[in-house]
Length: 167
Image 1 (cartoon, rainbow, N blue to C red):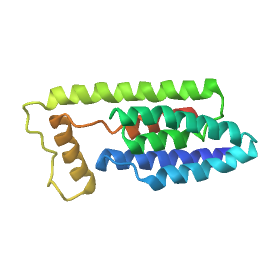
Image 2 (cartoon, rainbow, N blue to C red):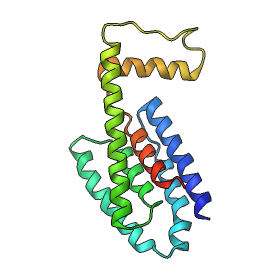
Image 3 (cartoon, rainbow, N blue to C red):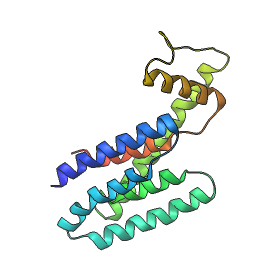
Image 4 (cartoon, helix red, strand yellow):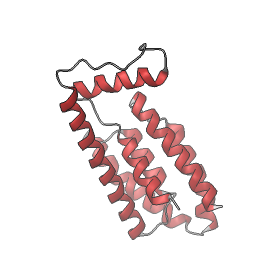
């Protein structure tokens, strides 16, 4: 059962990452769905109390970052909810935390490199702009990068958690 729930969790994380990339928001229902996917795992493994306590701890710590405007509210909820998919142990949680931070660093470096590359250039994607959703999303992302917009941190959260969950 855990394998199927892990796959469902990874699919939901991928959706949250894609939504954040395109719209810079993480829908609340994705975090709620991740919690619903994680519940059978935690019940089956009889570690619900520890998992919920750790998830609430993560939520509280990340809520401080949200108050400091360093992290979005959707990212806080996504990270806390996805922590329920992991074994509630300090080692697993700390390792996943470092993985997410590492993925965030990779994302930040990539965006800084792209910002330097895009500066002063009028980049356009080949083909007719606006026809395909992915082209509109790519144009919007290029504009955000040139403007120094925020990072889609759900991408880093999802990548770090997916690495932790991958069998």
